[in-house]
Amino acid sequence: MIEMQGVTKKYPNGVTALSGIDVTIKQGEFVYIVGPSGAGKSTFIKLIYREEKPTDGQVVVGGINTANLKQRSVPTLRRQVGVVFQDFKLLPLLNVYENVAFALEVIEEEPKVIRKRVMEVLDLVGLKHKARMLPTELSGGEQQRVAIARSIVNNPKVVIADEPTGNLDPDTSWDIMSLFETINERGTTIVMATHNKEIVNTIRRRVIAIENGRIARDEQRGDYGYEA
Ligand code: ADP
Ligand code: ADP
Image (cartoon, rainbow, N blue to C red; front, top):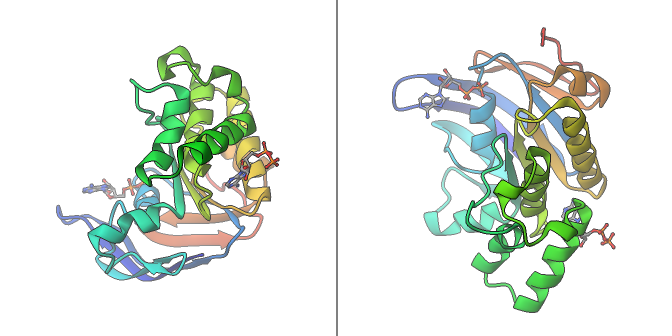
């Protein structure tokens, strides 16, 4: 599903965020990306949804090589990749329904299909009854549920999450994690950068640790491995 070969990312300011990354993530895997601040986790995530391009090497996502992707083909890649952020990034002037529908409207899906699909995913995240509310009227956990609904509404093969529980209290974080588990059980690949030691050490999955821009560990059912 995701293949990186000899990937190096050097930012224009001269910082080398990643170097010599070789990794394969298969369809259906659930992978945590851990490591100290500044290690390169966000950069790793950004390469997958092509927010950044590698300076060297190959990043192939669902058969699409992101490095030589034409600008007009970026939407094709983004349709395979749902993204969830720490700070939710919902559109503040749109209600819950509209935030989720937006992704389908831009690809000009039929209105009937949009309505059905949006209500299905809102049901999945437990927010059907709040479809008409604005993001500011929701708790943090609810806003993250909306963001997760948005990320899966067009049935992507992979969901990328950068610190999705970083702004949430512990109880809410566990709820959000069970949602990610449900999505993963349905076959969607999950790649999640996180600092949440409790979660990584409890919901055991593959752990890729990045330190100084390199893969320091890659273990099935790994542990967090750092002090929280
Ligand atoms: P992490 O997510 O593990 O904290 P990042 O991928 O955000 O790590 O950052 C890795 C390194 O790249 C850090 O030294 C950071 O300062 C640098 N960096 C990240 N984004 C940029 C950018 N847009 N421009 C320049 N340097 C950046
Ligand atoms: P059902 O199981 O009857 O489809 P659910 O309410 O459980 O209904 O699911 C609602 C919708 O969410 C379904 O259309 C399903 O395809 C979608 N869905 C659930 N998990 C995922 C996923 N991992 N990726 C994409 N879509 C998903």
